[in-house]
Length: 470
Image (cartoon, rainbow, N blue to C red; front, side):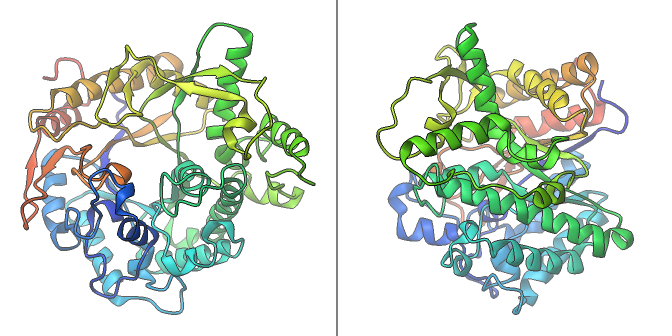
């Protein structure tokens, strides 16, 4: 059984579902630019111009949420819909109205809004100034957050500043996997992470200072964790797996959640050593001042966790210094997945439930019993209505979650199934479908159809258990 106070929800992100990319005063964001100028980078050459058209169909979405019986709905705000130029001098009343209508409708239906302030869609005018490689982004993000708290904070009590900084920084600035696609691994991604962490802390302190006493909400950040299992039982590979966790999760989490603050020690050490060998005058990983370490440390009310899958890690400490810098070289690890693990339509996502339990135990130990909200968990397919593979995934991952709660005393407070709808799945376009509800993207009305998994999830929520639920 799930604890009595445990919350169940589902989630979406603005660019992936809203559409209306250039309507009602919305400005251009990096994913608009990325998909329009480089459609060849998207598997089916698609974009989020219309997506699920949730900008016009949000009422239908709330009906779906109500039928499933979820207690909360996690969605993100489009920065460009609220501030078309990115800067707070010009607020778009239609954007404010849209989110007010959605929030009010959720509350009317007894569904808690869990709001992500930023889910990857930087306003293009700010990206033109360097985006998260520009330290001024911390101020611009704080200005945006203040507008958000002022307009929605009287009703929204659960906030996430950022979704998955690793995907923003490592894949967007370090590689060209995500927008803006800078391909500056080992430099651009470290700059992005440094400024993003400071921006998160600034917004947390803003809320503490100006809004918490009146609004009584909770603020945190959500970080994605792929469990890293040693490729062999050798000491080198076990250390490599732990290093990989430090470089992929601790990078963003330790400055906020670790009792000591700052980046993981092994990360600081290895990047500094390698930078010196490569001829850099200083470490490519920026340093926090002592004052910044203290300012950032403890800026959370819970830990948001996205988890999908597991990898294997191997030590490559003998790697040469030739070639461009990269995070992979800094971490001295390579990762892969066991080909025998059950696959999904997403090349990176294998079904490995035991990795979920291990992830939660590791987090519990590293961050001293921090309360955890699972803010995304799910699996992709081709959009089948009778999606037994997704039901099987949820059964096993929810069972792994219960193992962590009951057998290892991990303090997990909520679970979020990704996603409410089939949607624009970034580089996969509309090929990979994560939704509990099928969306017909050939239908101008974007018809939604509940999948078998939506009914399964409804039963789990109603019974508050997974045993005996078909």
